[in-house]
Length: 197
Ligand code: ZN
Image (cartoon, rainbow, N blue to C red; front, side):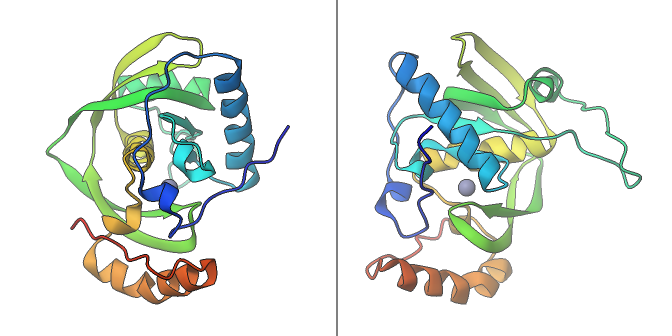
């Protein structure tokens, strides 16, 4: 299996909008398998097409059930977690968020395209996710917990948005030198982070 290269912040493909997948054929199934492998190889919990240089609306995720402080799995309370967590890894084809809760929370995010830099991002606690799965079936599910967080982060990628654009000001300032260093190292001289908050 071909090893996919993870694109890093500054690469224009991360700022581009991905196009819908038209048919789920062998090439899409193969891409999904390669993306899952790349996600595992890099210890990620999600990966979007843009991050491997493919501008198609495909996302792979592997979110584990949350644990309490004794390491016991907390039963998920959203229908999306109940349905999807037992199926992990899950590939989402043409996913959309059809609604975002007004209730938000801050949580520290990282990204395989921004290695070793972490910052708090405020996002909705719950979302309603509409998507196709790799077998062609469709889902429409309310998701909470880490799954809701991960889906929002990954779907942003498909629209050309990276979490550093949404990071809270203090957190952003703390990682800004690291971002600059990374961009310089990547040779992306004209790149600037277009902040969305
Ligand atoms: Zn990411």
